[in-house]
Structures are given as structure tokens and as C-alpha cells.
Image 1 (cartoon, rainbow, N blue to C red):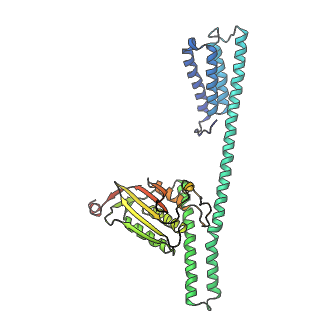
Image 2: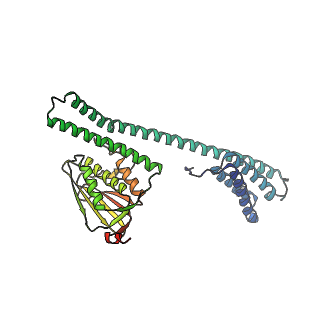
Image 3: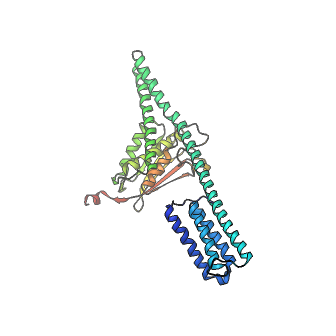
Length: 360
């Protein structure tokens, strides 16, 4: 039996539906009884009881089993319309039917309960594994910048007089970079919790994509990345009615991801265009790309590429996917034919040029 995802039905309705199903199946069988014979009807009723056992609790199933036995005896076993059974063979068949129906109902229900328990155990194991992954990631991603901040501030406090202006600037830069990294991880955790809780509600307003892209690139470059980012956006691209914060976060996470997984001298290209009220943004790099067998996994929560020394909680790309879908859009990843990775985001949104917007 496969796993079933059936909405829980109230106990009272289970009794009612069990009786109703048995009555309907019995009525259909009665209409064709002259063709099938009463022994075939017994098989049909047993199958019906088994199907009910797959869905409902044990007592409604037992009620269905008893009711089906009584209906089979009264309407189908000769003589009809009486509970009397003339032949010993039919008496034995009725007794066996009752026993088999009851045992079948109980066993089917027990199997379903065992499957449910196995599913719960598997979910619990996956949850524990997920939390372990998260804790392992956070132990590095949060403690590392905190240790950097503490070390730099200690140097500034204890050796302030012996430090040159250049040394002080370097320490302040380390504090700023570590704080930036720490803030990014906390923000990713908060965003993921919002996505999973279903609290993501886009606040759409008219947005200038050029402005969003340049502001986001500036934020990323403040993190002192070594890659060169180039922007290619048509200055005549229309305004889009979408959530500015979500689009910024999508871009930011993609650029941070590219800066982590590409060589120091790599280039990152951003291209934005509009096609029939759809915002299309491409973020591509000339790095080594993604392993082909892992492309389908990179958007999963807490997933990190195998055989990489780069840190990260594995939340960045899952947030990209979550925000893109919250905006009604999609995100796709592929390795470019020339090398490197290419992310393509498509977000449907109402468009307007500035002259049209002023007239609204």
C-alpha cells in the first residue's frame, strides 16, 4: 500500500459514509444479481470493506463489515429477504464471509496505522537531520564572524596605542566585513522562517529595475568582493509593479552566491529585460558552474555543494526560489555553454513607462 494523504474525516461522518458506501454498492450489486450470482457479490462487498478500511478508523470499518454481512445474507443468499439460511454450504460461506470481513478490516487498518507510524518516524528522522545540518552550519557561519569581531575589538582596545592608522583601518574593516556576514546569515534565517510560515505577502509598488540592480550591486561590492560585476539593462526598460524588497533580496543572494563559488578574478554579468509584462533577469558568471548531478538540488533548504570548502548555511538559493515563487515567478539554473552558471528569473508584473504612470 502506498502512502495516502487523506484529509481527516470526523468520526460521525465516517460512520455515515461507511453505511452509505455499503448501501450504494449493495444496491448496484442487487441490480445485477441475476448476472453475477450471490457468491460474486460477496467478493465485491469484501473489496468495498477493504477500501473503507484504507480511509477510515477501525470502528466505522467494523460497522461496514457487519452491515455488509447482514445485507449479503438478507438480500442475496437464498431464500431472499430473510436471515434464514437453508443449506449448510451457504451457512458456512456466510460464517467465513463474516470472519474474513472482520479480519480483513482489522488487518487493513493495522497496516495503515503501521505505515502512518513509519512515516512519522521518517519525518522525525528527517527533522533531526535537518536540525543537525542547520546547527553544524550555524556553528561555523555565526561563530566565525563573531570570533572575528571579538578578536578585532580586543586588538583595538588592548593595543590601541601601538597600532598604526593603517592597522586600525584594517581591523575596522574586518569588523565591518564580519558584521556584514553575520547580518546576512540572520537575515537569511528570518526570510526562510517567513517563507515556511506562509507569511510572505508581496507589497507591490512601481519599481525602477535599473535602480534596484545598481543599489543591490553596490551593497554586494561593499562586502569587498574581488569579482567584477557588469550590468546590462536597457535604460528604456519599463517600470514594474512588484515587491522591491523581494527582488533586491533575490538579486543579492544570487550575487553573493556567485562571489562565493567563482574564482577571485571571475566576472559576473547581470542582464534585465522585459517580455510581455514579464520581468526577466539573468545573473551569469564565467566560473566553473555547478556539478550537473547537483543542479536539481541547489534550491533545497540547507543544501550545500559536495566537495566544496566554501561555507554557508545553504539558505541563499532556497530563499531566491521562495521569493520568486511568492511573486508568482520562477527561477531556473543551467550551466552556460561557455562555462559558468546562469540563473534566470522570470517574474510576471504589470508594466508602465513613466509617461503612462504620470497619467494614472
